[in-house]
Amino acid sequence: MRDLGGLWADLTDLVLPAGCAGCGERTSGARQGFCPGCVRELESLRPGPARPSPVPPALPPCVALGPYAGALREALLAYKERGRHGLARPLGGLLAEVVAAAVPGPPRPVALVPVPDTAPAARARYGDHLDRLATHAAARLCAAGWPVRVLRPLRALPRPDSVALDSAGRAAAADAAFRLRRFGGPSLADRDSAVVVLDDIVTTGVTLAAVSRVLHAAGMPPKAAAVLAATQKRRHW
Image 1 (cartoon, rainbow, N blue to C red):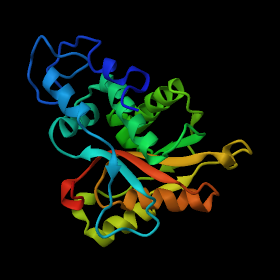
Image 2 (tube, one colour):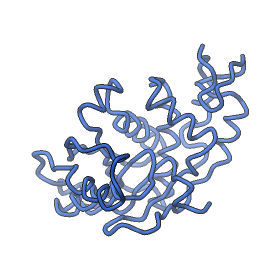
Image 3 (cartoon, rainbow, N blue to C red):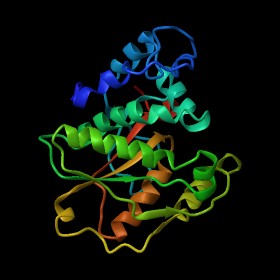
Image 4 (cartoon, one colour):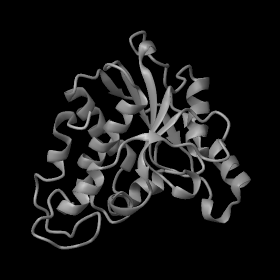
């Protein structure tokens, strides 16, 4: 799936005035936000299992593109925290590769469920950053012949800053962080779909596990979780 719908063309088809999103260098060779060296680094990544330790209850099998380091880490920071929304397209394409690895075999119906931002986070970032990635990932998968829908059955509630919490506190906050919208569950056509939860980074896995529990209770048990990066302290690559 490396050439999924021209993924790597997205990394090199649009000249941007800003420096490389992966290394910060300003070079005439930087296109779609990445210099040639960072394109090669991203191209070398292959999706693989990402399992936090300890594993929180209800965490579905999780697949990540790579460790939260190098060009991938800097690109995610540029996209989420520095307002480089144009990176949603190439990062969404990379996330599509992870989804394909998380649901192996020939293309099959897939329902993508992005972890929602809280309202304050979405306002600060001028939109839900995972929702944008999910939209581009779905478009990439559809172009490759996958029947894909993006579902948004969850809303995120305000929660305390995890920096001030210990592991038990973070788990408790995550459990109370998501609620089901007024949503009637999957249609008959959707019941054959593989539900895949999307996030950008996995660290402890408590957020993905909390989302999984809400979806499971709604009759939409996730088959897998797909993320772009896994923190290295929790995952040996």
